[in-house]
Image 1 (cartoon, rainbow, N blue to C red):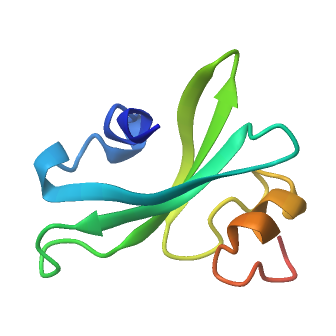
Image 2 (image 1 turned 45 degrees about the vertical axis):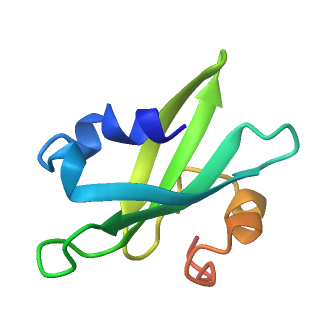
Length: 92
């Protein structure tokens, strides 16, 4: 799954060696969603960010990342609640 983060266009402007993907866990009724964090190797260079991945036809894809409202409008609310992204605000 972490390969999907490193291979994504959403992370293309950041060198792979500048961050690690941690804490990935599955969500959804069939485990078709996953979430975790990007942790910077140098905290002065990057901020930590949440990542949301979706598996379709056996292939994981990074569909959202950020520091707030990650997954809103992208994944079902139940998935966001399972992953506990930033407390899942009411507007999600």
